[in-house]
Image (cartoon, rainbow, N blue to C red; front, side, top):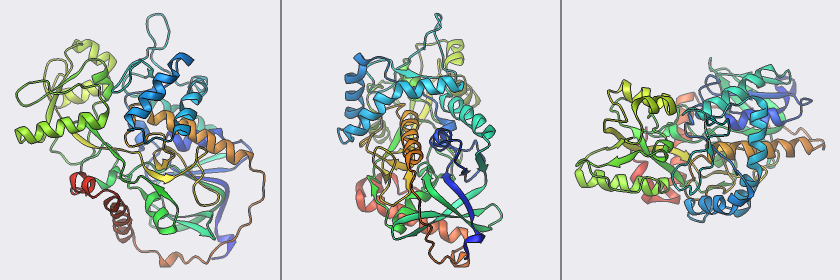
Length: 441
C-alpha cells in the first residue's frame, strides 16, 4: 500500500475513556491528534466508575496512603509507580477542578472525602455515585472543542503497523467493515481491560483486550496478565449483559454483607480480593450463587441523595438497599496487568505507549486499591503526553508491506484475539483460569 493511501497524524489515541481523553488534552495544541473509539464516545468503562478518585490530602497522609496501596497489592506493586501516582495526585485533581469537574462538598464547602475498603483514611473525592461519568464527560466536552483533536467513533484497531520494533501506526476497521490505516509519530493505547471476554463482568461487552492480543502477536512485553480483579459486589441478576456494580463506597458508608441465614460473615472494608474470597466461601457453604448487601446506616432519602444511581438500580429490581437484603455476586471488574510500561507509559516497542487499564506500570500490584484506577489513568496519561511533547526528534517513516485483504473477517479475528489472551492467562495462572475464566463468553 502506498503512503498516500494512509491517514497521517501526529498522535493516534485508541480509546476515549479518561486515560485517552486526558492524554489528548495534555498534549500540545500544535499536535494533530486523532482519537478513535470502538463504539460511541460515552460507551467506555470510565463512564461507569462510581466510587471516586483518590488524592493525597496533605503530606502527613503520604505514608498511610502509600502503605494502603502496597498492602492491597500484596506488596507486588512497583514502589516508584506508587510514589509517582500519590505525589502527582494533588496537581492532577487541581487540573480537573480547573477544567470544571465538580466534586461533592460538605456544608462548609470543603471537599467531602469518603473512604472505601482497605483505606485507613477518608481520601476519596466523589461526585454522587457517578464520579467517572462527571470526569469523563467534562474531559470529553473540552476535547470536542479543541481544533487539534478529532474524535472518530465505531472504529476498531485490528493491528499494529510496525517495523523493526518501531510502531508506525495502526490498521483499523469501521462499522461498515471497511479497513484502513493510520500513520502517526506516536501511538497511545487506551483500550481498557478484558471484561467483554467474561460472562459476568462490570465492563462493557466490547472491551475485549484488543491491545493485549496485538501485543502478543507483535512481541510487545506484557506483565501480570493473570492479575485480574473480581469485584465482590455486583447486583445479582439472571439477565444477560453487563453486571451493575454496587460500589465499594456503599460499604464505606456502612453497608454490610449477609449470608443466606442473614448473618454477617466478614469485615466489609478489607481489600477487594479478600472480600470476594469470603463471599465465594459463603456461596459454597450454602450452595447459592449470591449473598446479600444492606445499608442500615442510611435512610432511603439519604441513600437516594448519596448514591442516586445505585439506589435507583436496586429499586428497579424491587429492593430498597436501606431496608432490604439486596442480592449481590462477584464479577470480573478490572485488569491490574496489561501492556508493560515504565512510569511514563513507554512500552517495549518504539513510539508505542499504553495508559489506563491497558497499561501495567505495576502501580496496583496483585490487587487494586479502591478508587486508584481513575487517578492512575490521569497521572500516567499526563506523563505519557508530557514525554511525547518533549520529543522533538524526527521519526523515520518506514512502513512494512500491508495487504488489507489479508486480514480475516471480524468473527475469526475476535476468536483468535480471545484465544491469545485467555491462553496467556491460563499459562500464567491455571488456578485462577479454572476458577474465573471457565465461564467466559
